[in-house]
Structures are given as structure tokens and as C-alpha cells.
Image (cartoon, rainbow, N blue to C red):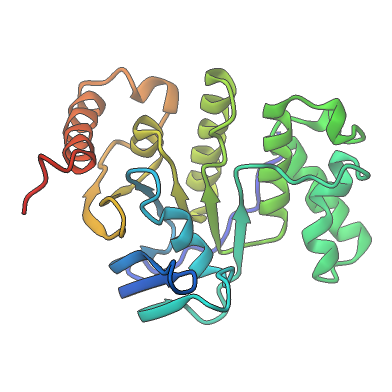
Length: 270
């Protein structure tokens, strides 16, 4: 199988994205809402950081802030910086594939927009389509694919753009358990090979633990970082096998209790 081209590893301490006391207020009066309050978090080169928290706590707002997708009326305070020269990729919940393009055509979109030559971008797309296991479907259209296959195409398309950091907004949420685990395994394998930097948000605590090198737990709205937990499992990881280990179960129970306490206003510290 063709591998993703290895990316030059960044210095371990390099922060590609850094938020310091970052706050976001959305909407207009009288419906202004503080979505994020005083978020401080660094995303280091080569790691997968996962954010979890109650619904509506501002996880997607944080991703949208990083890539400049907030509305002009948004009020930002504190600081949020992306290191010079860092290229961002965004993988949303829905695949948003172009229905008139084949799998190959969809994966080629990013390099095409960047002006990469036809032969080079086709070679790159073919390699990534093989990586995600869809070589037999390279000439198929989105409507001919299952949901899991479409998300594989979306992942390949994001990688083809050549990002230094991928922002992932619950990209596997709509998939069945088998396809979800398969794509988690794929992401772990790609990260192990390329040391690609990933910031992923999810409501699935199990997913957060098997994917994250660090898990940032957010409070209820207005969202802030309650704590950041290191996940020190042996590498390379297997999403399927890790879930049955005592270390996984211990961390799951610990973070579950934190989230349950945060979701119940009667149990929060004053």
C-alpha cells in the first residue's frame, strides 16, 4: 500500500496554535452570548489534541475562531495565534463532497486550488485514495458511496491540501461503530507516520481517549478549559484494542466523572 509521504517533524515544543485567555461573544443585542471565556490552550506540532465538553460549550466556535469563520459581529478578547506559515485544513461533520466530481476529482480539489500541476496533484490524490482504501472507487461519484466511504474521501481530500494542522469537527459522529473505529485507526496510522498535527472536537469520550495525546475538558457555556489531561498510552496505538485495557477504562471513568459533574449544575463548585 502506498504510504502518506512522511512530513518533516517539528520540534517537540513548537506551538502551532496558541490561545491565551481567549474569549468570544457572539450575536447582537439583546441576544449577545458569551460563547468562550478565558480559554488558554496550546496545540503542539505533531500531536492530536481532543476537546470534549457539554453541548453548546463553544467547541465549534473555537475551531471557527482559529480558521477565521466567525461572523463580523463576533467580539474577541485575549489572543489566539497561528504560527507563521502554518496551513490549516478543516474536516467538518458533513463530508460536503462535490456531487459532480468523482472520488479522484474531489480529492484533487485542494491541490488544484493551490495551482498544483495536473500530473502532480493526480499522483498525490491517487496515493491518498489508496491510503484510505478506496482505490477501487476512484472513479465513483459521491452518491454511489456509503457514508463511511464518503468520510474517507473527505479525509483524503483534507490531507491532499497539504495542511500542517487539521481541525476536525466531530468528523466521525454520523458513522456506525465499525466505520467509526476504522477511520479512527486510519487517523492514528497517518499521525504515527507523518506526525500531522490535529485538533479534534467530539462528544464521544471514548473517541477522545483513543485518539488524543491530550484531552482538553471544557466547562458548560460559557466554555473555558476546565483541565487538560495527558493520555500516555504506548505508541503506535490501536483504537480497537485500546478500549479493552485497564488504563483506558481507568481514564474513561475519571473523565466521565469530571464531565458528569460539570454537566450537573448542582454538583459544580461554587
